[in-house]
Amino acid sequence: MRANTWAGRNSVEVRDVPDPKILNSRDAILRITSTAICGSDLHLVDGYVPTMQDGDIMGHEFMGEVIEVGPGVDSGRLRVGDRVVVPFPIACGACAACANDLYSCCENSNPNAGIAEKMFGHPVAGIFGYSHLTGGFAGGQAQYARVPFADVGPLKIESDLTDEQVLFLSDILPTGYMGAEMCDIQPSDVVAVWGAGPVGQFAMDSARVLGAAKVIAIDKEPYRLQMAEQAGHTPVNFDEVDVRSRLLELTGGRGPDKCIDAVGMEATHGSAHISAYDRVKQAVRSETERPHALRQAILSCRSGGVVSVIGVYGGLMDKFPAGAWMNRSLTLRTGQCHVHRYMKPLLQRIERGEIDPTRIITHTLPLDEAPHGFDIFKNKQDNCEKVVLKP
Ligand code: NAD
Ligand code: ZN
Ligand code: ZN
Image (cartoon, rainbow, N blue to C red; front, side, top):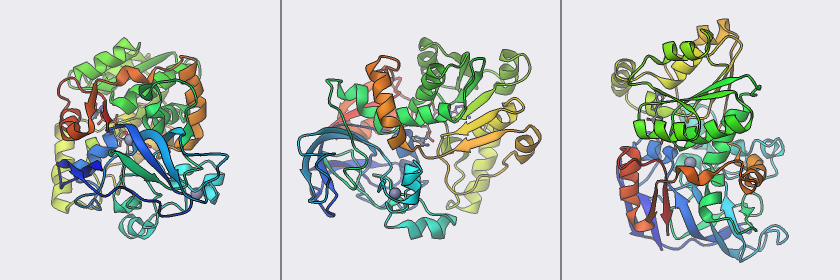
């Protein structure tokens, strides 16, 4: 089959690779009809996840048709011919974490949990297409994929919604939604969202759906801010204004009630594995050239407010504003998205027309053009917001 593979730092390549096979009795094989490129893939391409190997298949946002199931898959839940969306965290559905709806913390889904334990001092769960640190599972930017615990995660789509309407249930729509839900939004709340990428856009839409009075979009890419403005949110360009002052202006001098970081490592590049020299260089660069989203969110939030972090971090982060967090009684909430929790209720919101996930798609490309898709998404060219790939 054809698959988009990691080919070293800043390089992906579509290659011929062996078709996936059933390895465990609860596996299924999917023929993929649509898959997408995510901001999380950029952390891999940028080289911030040190356990990617040449030839690893990328991608954790995908859907398609079940063409084979292992003998242990519960036929009441999944059968050959079903059309499904696959959540990006791999979850067994039976461990203590899964029993508490903490699917992205599943205790049974990462056969390589020891690597993270050694590197960061804590385990991480299994994720598709996200390096050997998260289990070494092949990703979904391919013609076919193997899906473990296939009767737990995949959501059947039984209506005639298009792939484009449901694909993002695999990750970014639930992630944006969880970012807003963690804010415990009240009707008078002003919610500020750092990052107007795909995840940020869905955090903004979700904040509105959950009843926020005003939603502010912070980014520096004019076309991304314009997209947020067209959806009814208030843009703030951090290249043009001092963000904290502008936020104070917009909130009667108090600061936003709730702040969502939908940026993550792009701003910090603070992973533990990079060399000490690189870390200092990058810290200096991020202080002088571009503001740091999470620090700014913590320093801008009103007293007693919530800072919700859905941007991805790995390893350590320098200069965490512990003083503001403590003295202003802030609540910090975060997590890799527990996608399984949100798929069904969000599918219903899509069916009812409350959220239109297709509004962020700017590019649809054949799988073979994945490298071009990565280029324009990473470098913010051609007004690229979200790329869908068709295998
Ligand atoms: P993206 O790279 O397209 O978007 C990030 C945006 O942040 C860009 O538009 C960039 O211009 C903007 N930005 C950079 N520095 C900023 C700053 N200081 N202030 C404000 N904006 C800034 O990526 P995406 O697909 O939208 O993903 C965003 C983040 O969410 C990534 O870190 C990704 O890994 C993470 N993510 C997390 C989960 C989860 O489960 N928690 C799931 C999916 C993605
Ligand atoms: Zn993703
Ligand atoms: Zn589990």
